[in-house]
Length: 79
Image (cartoon, rainbow, N blue to C red; front, top):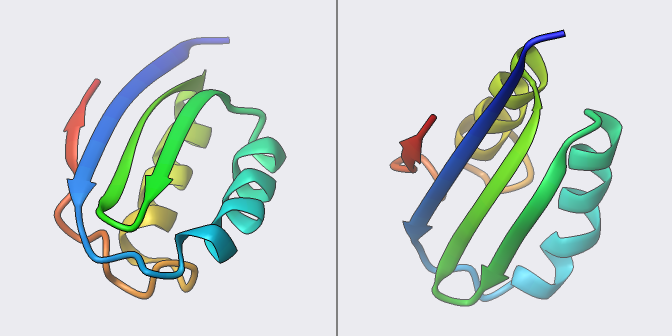
């Protein structure tokens, strides 16, 4: 099973970051990802590892999913 590591961040207004934590954790756990993701009112910063397809699904969720509503559409990514 090939693994992939992704480091990402974006400065964005996330005044609801506290409410986003549990759903974001559920998404990442459901995909079997490991790592750390920091949410704050100023944005997101994280480094995660997992199956390549799980990483791709997670990054797509951040950028285009309902949880963030398009607020993270300019993620800076490193693989």
